[in-house]
Image 1 (cartoon, rainbow, N blue to C red):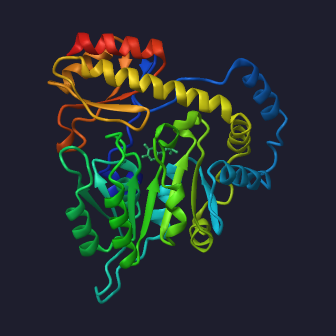
Image 2 (cartoon, rainbow, N blue to C red):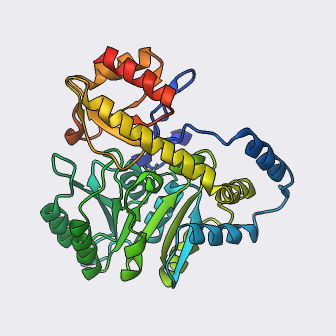
Length: 366
Ligand SMILES: *Cc1c(COP(=O)(O)O)cnc(C)c1O
């Protein structure tokens, strides 16, 4: 009997679908919350010089600590806290699952660690849990995408999750959740010994951040990324939390996970925060323009946004998605992700010209 090499791969991995990245060749790319703006040419040249001069023959070294400090200053990290870096926050999410993978005890008295998050939410919370053999508990949001307080508290009491994720604002719904409900959830998780991760991937576009409240708790981590900020290609995520807790999670990090190129690009960006702040301001202003224009389209329901994306509900999501695609505009059809997202599409806020083209294509595709 011969064994196919692929049979050696875990059964659950064989039955998984790979994370799908849509082909965007020749399209107006509004599917992945990327910042549409690039660096000004003078800065591109300056960065090129700096990257060219790096010692690529050496493993990443002390420079990574310069970046940790620069990010901590940029984010106004509280006293007594520490910061760790990931190859995008996707890697931090994977490391959290790895660090919390406590197996079930033989007598079944203590359950295996689990991960909990509101759904619909960011797909990597569930995927990282599943890959690590942890149970994922998705708690449905209300129909208007608010946290279901009673359902969340009930699920926390029942499952005692090791990690509870709260994306602030949430993806793909783009909204911030009620702060009083968030505090109740954080308190409930704390009482049963779990961790809460506030995921602020969209912080540059948000009217609020949890950073000022972070120091109140010893079981809350705050995760951010430079991806939506304007460096999706660089792959740099960071996570802040109480020193002793970060020290434990940092042990599962691959030693050289941030390349010298990632690191130097991120440092360069932090020396030019004014450029990125102006880009974020332009996108927030375009978001305002889009929210208003979309509201005027007949049959389109528009949801509030604190991010660089807008969720809309249309009469026929598949037809509208295909219509946009035929007009060279790529967005994300999220309508099959969760029943609450029936007929919903997620639009990334782009440049003035891209948004005009998207609006025209949308109107023609309804
Ligand atoms: C995009 C996103 C991330 C991950 O971004 P990286 O590119 O891996 O840093 C994390 N959380 C949420 C909610 C996101 O939308």
